Image 1: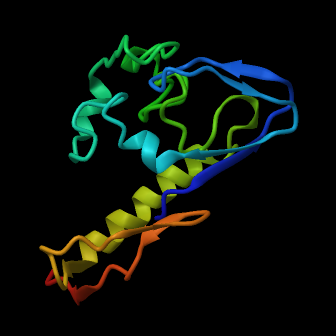
Image 2: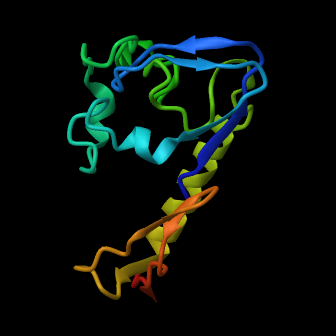
Length: 157
């Protein structure tokens, strides 16, 4: 899976709140918007310990009054098992949000979990260089700069 840059075109002129930058942003009609989901997901302004694997973070409320205009994350606003753009006030948008949200988001999430479960049940994965950070390279998607070399072995069942 590769975190991506969400690309959208504004339908109307708008002014975005200053958020954590301290600057309001005027968005002209028909402007192309490039939103880095990778950076949003790792922002300490939005998430506690953003680089730590913490699946329980989605069970805790999160607010930051320093990010002006952000309503925070409220798990009680989730519509299902997974966080949503509504619960996170659009700080978590892996499938977009609003009227133009991906219609296959629930299917894609469940499909990826099913594939991952089957793979992890049948295979063992080990990083070739577990102590070396692989580096990141940004383009339309974000991926490792030199690949992520693993050994894969069939799991004894």
